[in-house]
Amino acid sequence: TIQQPERLQLQLYRRLLWGIPKATPDVMSLDETDNQICTPTHLFRVVETPGYSVDHISLYEPHQRWLFCGDVYMEGKEDAWTPEFNMFGIVSSLRTLTSLRPEKLFTGSGAVRRTPQPELHAKIRQLVTLAREVARLEIIGLNTPEIVACLFKEESRLAFLTRGHFSALNLVEACRAYNAIFTSELEPHNSYPEPGDRYSRFGRSSIDPLKSEPSDENDLAG
Image (cartoon, rainbow, N blue to C red; front, side, top):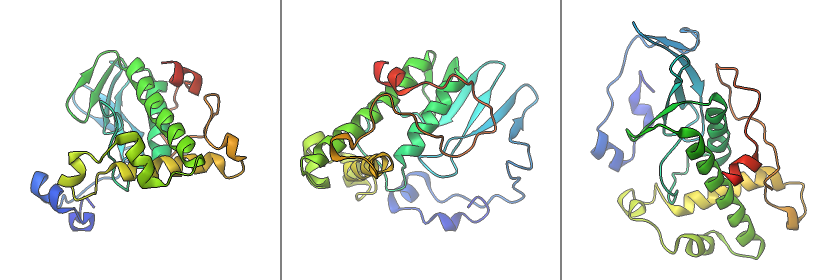
C-alpha cells in the first residue's frame, strides 16, 4: 500500500481530511532493516502492535525507554470503532506495551504520557470491562443495536461524519468477536472472560518483552 496507495480504498472523509497519499518508491521491509530504525542519535526497535490495523507497529527506544505507540493507545472512553479494529489484537498489543515498561509514551494524537503504565492498564481495563458488559447484555437476550442503545444511548457524531465507518455498532461487534474467542466451549453463565483469564499474544514483536506480563488482575485493579 505504500507503493500502491490506491489499494487503500480510502473512505471519502479520509480523503477530505488527509488527502490521498502519494506512492513511495524504494521501500525497505522491516525484515530488511532487522526490525530496527536507526538515526544519528537513536535506535528504535520495531514492535508489531496489530489491532487497529493488521500491520500497525510501534517504535521503542530502549535507552530512553520512549515508546511511540501510534493508535494503539487512544485517550478517553472508546465509543466508536471501524469494522477493521480487532479487540483481541488491541488488548494484546496494549499488554505488549505494558511489558516494555516505557517511561514516556508518545501517542498518535500528539499527547505525551509521562506516567504511561497506569494509563495503559486503565485502557486495558476499560476494554475488557466493556467486553464483559456486552457479554452480560447478550446473555439476557439483547441484540447488537439494543446493546448499543443500552451502553451508549446513541451513536456519536463521529458516526454521522464518517457515514457509519466509525460507530458504536462496530465497537459492540468487536466486543462480541472478542468474547467469542473465549466462549466457544463455555457454558452461558461463564460466557465472558473472567479477570484471571490469560490470553496468548496476537502477532509477533521484534522485542523479547519482560517475562512478567501484566495479568487481568492488574488490568482490572488498575
